[in-house]
Amino acid sequence: MTISVTLVGATGWVGRALVQAISTSADLKLVGAVARSAAGQDVGTAAGLGKSLGIAISASLAEALKTPSDVVVDYTKPNVAKTHALSAIEAGRSVVVGTSGLTADDYAEIDRASRAKGVGMLAAGNFSITATLMQRFALEAARYVADVEVIDYASATKPDVPSGTGRELAEKLGEVRRQGTATPVEKLFGAKATRGAEIGRTQVHSIRMPSFVLSCEALFGAPDERLTIRHDAGSSAAPYVAGTLLAIRKVAAKPGLRRGLDQILD
Image 1 (cartoon, rainbow, N blue to C red):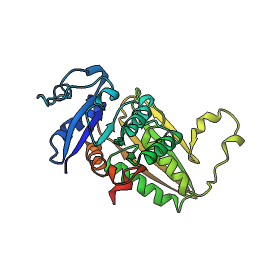
Image 2: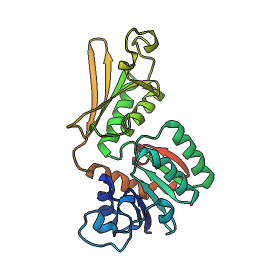
Image 3: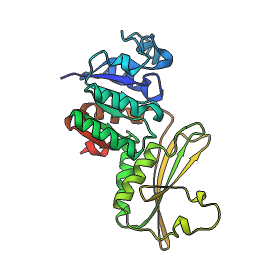
């Protein structure tokens, strides 16, 4: 069975790599692409493949949805990803979201919509296999070490804070961790914002500066010892492609929202 795919953000960093990967996969077929800045161009040429794929890029998802597809994949911006997901769900498509910056409330709304429509939805802060393992190991450590904080690193131009990786990790840590020993933020003196933001009962610190691509670490502290579990991404989009393709293949199996690549790894 061939799965037909509409790709939103086809000329972005991950999008270009996905155009190549989907177009060369025997069981996947790219049938639509969205990129406002490249509307009207052939997606193969615009994505740098050096050849035409016979698919014109649409200026909007609404336009692209006129062509039937099974799955919509979104790698865009946090200010439009939620709208894209809800529009695709309303059109009866399963959805894979790799865009970071959506909140727990956003995902709750998307979950309700996907369940009502009976379609699958899978979102991950990071589709890298090794980033998923970082999260898994951190969640295991949190069962034994109460004090943990998340540090999220990215380039100086990344617009959303924290990254999807950091937000997802913090929220999941909050579900399993015990109460830490640090003085509560409200009882501190001075600039309380220096303690970061609390997300899912976990303090998160976002660093944005040149030379970073994407990194995320869970820092654990216990009496006289520390543990750091960290993931560092390189400069290419390759780590995210395999996980996204896996999500495309499995997203329709279960109605409603699943968060995290770990939900389908096993």
